Image 1 (tube, rainbow, N blue to C red):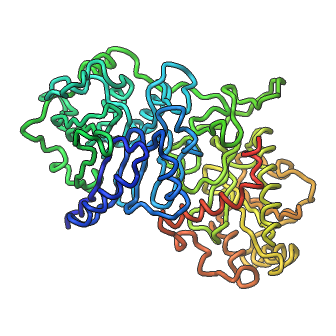
Image 2 (image 1 turned 60 degrees about the horizontal axis):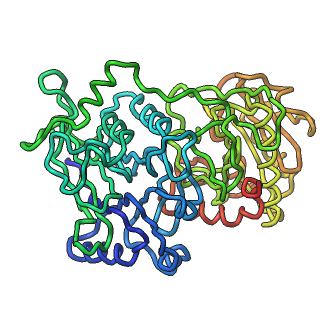
Image 3 (image 1 turned 30 degrees about the vertical axis):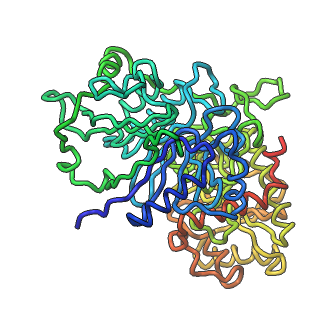
Length: 536
């Protein structure tokens, strides 16, 4: 059975004209039926955005379609994007983030790069640098069996995109746009590439991603530049198309070449790259990651990973490199960024996927560490800060938390933090439930001294299960053979504690992305007074 195509709308510079845009979208849907998503490139906000935006930000109005936008292209609009790693700005309006890959539930893969090209390192919050592009490119191209992406979203045009092609009118494509975007497009091979900023509409002829008679045929790419919303010259600013995700297409159908296909406009660039060493992302220092917070949101990290005001050099334990794609390294495209609720210097908080409760959160190191035992002292210090903040937060809501870690069949440290109402059970009840269910399954769960450190009982590389109550009591089990993967959740979900046995397996608790984003937004709002990362 053939896959059902997704119906997508793409839009150029909105510049704050939300009513004009969404009014047009409603009219199109009324005439042509519902579309699955709206993708916006260029300037989503403008100098007069605040009045219209306030109605959407507060929920008085709602976008008629799931809308995904790129970030700021100038300093004036940076403040509209509170989290550079991406977040929901309003109901049905999502900021994708500074750069990365968004994979829809249908399998559509959308690569994105926010901002304009910068010649400086580090790039301003509204720009990208050669290093940013190299890291994004490497993270995707290095994946096994990479063939390309379905869609690429950038704000600037790629330099020289008009080579071998139809005229772009008044736009000189040899001078306009970004060479870095050209390099990105040449390597990611998008089936559709959308850009804006030039207040012009230009649909380039499709181009090949292979050399005829020398390379195996590949799919073609289409570049479309879109004008600004509501422009007086009636230039096209909305583009509608249908697309079946590449992963679901018949290979022969995917590589069909249209009659008007041209050579790649980036052929000379690609040939030049083949004659020199490939461009690779620079090796990062211990605390240097592309997901960072700007000066308006949380603690700003210096380029060498040290906190401001601390001039004493430290011996930093570097995070290891994951063996493959990691769902929890913050710099990874696999991170489900809509679940992130707080980002510190070395750690971040995210709602659990398929959480036991709506406020079930994870404390995660930004870098790749397998367990608490492997953490550097700086990361341990910030984990402790998050524990204290969460204890204060949950106590303000009449709850106590239980924290557990399973260092077994996992590659990235996840500290699971689940709140339980204070009037539901005591700390002693929780501890007894863990011990009793461990005994039933012949698991030796031992209590360790309250003020001891887990590094005193576990060595790096040792599989273990660990429980910590916010009262300071701790339980530990060294795993020597098999271990039930959901043991921690099963104990907490049992009738003796939360009485939610049907939620013991996270896979049965999956929610829609919109619901997850709403829960994250609510948690982020409530947690804000306790979030030390925002006060630093």
